[in-house]
Length: 138
Length: 384
Image (cartoon, rainbow over all chains, first blue to last red):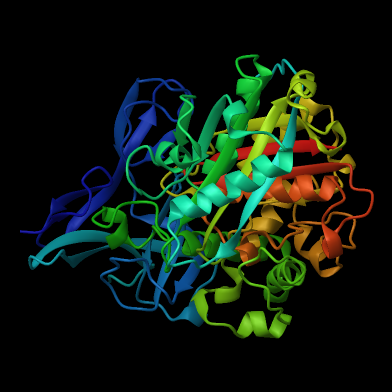
């Protein structure tokens, strides 16, 4: 059974499909939203936070085709790295898949895609979040 | 914003540099020591006079590396402090030395940094981190994201980014200490190997080896150490900030290209110096886009105009905002712990009118800005 690559950023509700959503926190004092783990608000330092889940869409803020990957990158090379702005505010970096380089446009709507990836050298898999062009799943 | 209250006036009395490049057969401690000896000689002060030392470095070389390096000069018992603040480690060591003297605790201090950075892409997280599988932890990919967005927002062209490297290499060709002294055309920069588009290899700083050192002294103590007042350079601002909330998340420092601004505003306020009074500037050009965005964040060029200013030659040695006059990270290379002190070395050399063929005429005010992961930014302003 695959698990999330990082449960503090990606909650997996169904590992078979797989299904899940990005998670974070909203500050009850200043309304700032953060992606990922938080015990204190990054903006006002309050500890009055509520955990939230994000929707599965975002808009492409920037991208790059990485030809020389970081050490430990398990995927194909080159790959497209996307910086995506969530409607709630935070930006999320992840691989952009299912698209040709020439079709990428800043501002385009992207969907979250959950992909099992081989993890480490043990043969186990983890579910990693990526971005994919909208409306591919239908 | 912090209310920086300088106490005593502080000067740089001496600087020393070990050449940047690859020195595989020379231990890091020897690089560090050479730069320190050069700085002591430049200031004409003895090691036994130094009251405190701050050492900037990042990669693990054994515990208390600053102490073991300096022990070869003699065991004088002074406080020696190891500083790790990512790419700003050296400039943070300098910042600490400044405040140690300004506050009156010490009269004379050493700030130095040294590093041997391995080749290949630089990441912030450890190799088993989830970010390695998500793909986002790649320093130059972060700069590439900034580049793409900057081009989209401002109309900057790939050639304007490449021109930053062309200029850096021209400056470095006049600097015997530089790692990369050969010059290139815009086309050659654009045609070098792609790392993360639009950034090609020559638009990414080499990961290098090197060391740099500076001796700082209280102005009122100069005579007691027989230091040449005419060659000493005033430190009129020393600002350091870490991350300010920017609403876009904090999982990669590339999210906040204009994080330099708070430190810059503090430095201008502390010194009373206006951006238009700055005669030369060293900025953190780990990639070409870094130089453009830092110049804008420092209020030296209006937002969105640094790329065209670069094409117009305004940032070259003969322009009105000479930038990275020694070649910067792009041509000097980037030994993390040494870089921030290297910028001080170049600023002091220019303000002393000792920069030879790359000398900026009548330079009186120099600014050095250094950035690091964790959103660390230092801004120092020096005057003649």
